[in-house]
Image (spheres, helix red, strand yellow):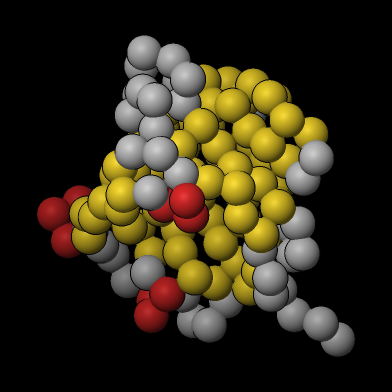
Length: 119
């Protein structure tokens, strides 16, 4: 399957997971296209002063890969961790995380949410 840039779904969400401001999302792969392996693969832009709130993943894991900008992450109890372009993080099943943009430039990253399976 090939998806052209013009076919990708654009969206935005205000107060995502209890965060601040409005986050823009370019949905690369939606849940319906992921063969029941995950929920989303998206390119996310967080404008200055905005964030995705602190939230838990249950039955899934999420990977962030920073493409541009600086994000401030909370990873479970570890707070104030700066992530730069090229950095990645994984929030495993049962864990908590958030990401915020405290700079004056947009924060851009890839987000992949995969379902976890227990044997």
